[in-house]
Length: 368
Image: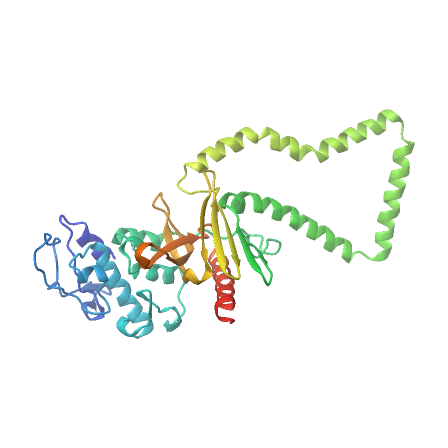
């Protein structure tokens, strides 16, 4: 990647156009060297001129066959090369789906999910879905993934709410703000409740009876206290009970400032997603601080589900679930469109999301 980054940053960019395993050499300096620059291309030929297609089948992206090689074309070849090395199978011999190389189930060794998604991003058949530069691909590899919060004992396994019956599947994906700020508070109270319940269950019956008796005595004493003292105690208890509400109101202006900051932080912290599936149709709704967006169709139009990484409008990459939908357009010409959900979820949650949707569609279409 560093070598490609150097070549692509030249003016004009230098494109290798024939990256494959035989053109990579492990040197005596324990570094990988790229060789065979006989297919190097400096610039795209003008429209209408003849050209020669170079490259090796299986490692060459579609746009290169049309004489439109770009820096991302070398990235595709690099991805195909790595897939070959990790599977031991020539890319041309691997199965394809919608022109994508399918290799996840052929990997000879376990690799991190992030690296798998990175390889799938490199080998995207569509240029617009691929990394645009070697630097961008390198930055994604070096980017640290967000770690889940540390309260695994009491935190729910997933922030995703899934409700399913024989007739419908509903999935609610909360916003990143809810996951990062609201759920930890809810989990904290949940953890406290669990601890108290466990403590009470562990108490011997004798101690439980003593606690109940003490509560009854305290109630009797309360009614026997002078009115002034009982009123003071009541005010104190009310103050303690409503203290969280008072703090919430006090920090409301700071919350508004936080909302403004997060709105411009490069991530849509407030976007939540609803997915609905029934026996025939599906609907995806993206709820955000702006107007909601909606996509509807039949489940037969969902052609594939992929765990991948997607780029938001600010240029940041996130792990996500891609739904590839075959659109109905004029003249009956099919068109595949990708829709992305779950950018705020962990890898485990995305795997769960993919499985639930895939199982539902398979059951309704093919009875599996």
